[in-house]
Image (cartoon, rainbow, N blue to C red; front, side, top):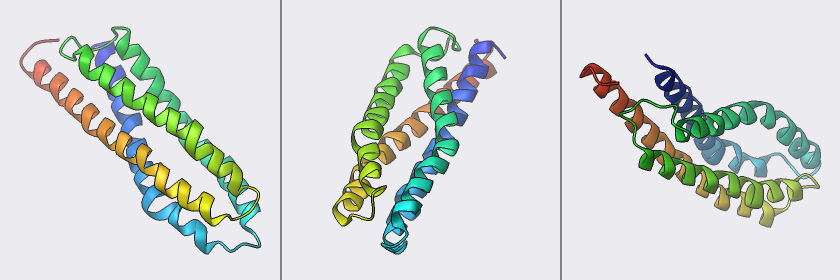
Length: 155
């Protein structure tokens, strides 16, 4: 296997970790914010943001870093640039949504439970959920393409 294959596998792994995390957050974690209770919610929200960062930042950075390496040409020759650029566009959507939509809602919630901020957080997080799901399907297709090429003796 070439260096490009290893980078592609790390890219796929980090993306798929985030696909699993975002679906858990969207379906289970964010909806349960309502059940925490108003009295301790500010502390809960602050702790949530701090602790969640330890879980999501490493795979998000690995995903973005390996996407950059793949775009720079460190990829299997069977992996086309068009699919990588589509994936990069989805990453821009995800990171933009994170910093312009979800982070501000978390900031509001760190002061205490706010029903409107919570509803906006859950609603806007669907952007990331769908974008990461599309990225997950895309990276699986890229890995399958690279595996098929390798099985046929192509790099």
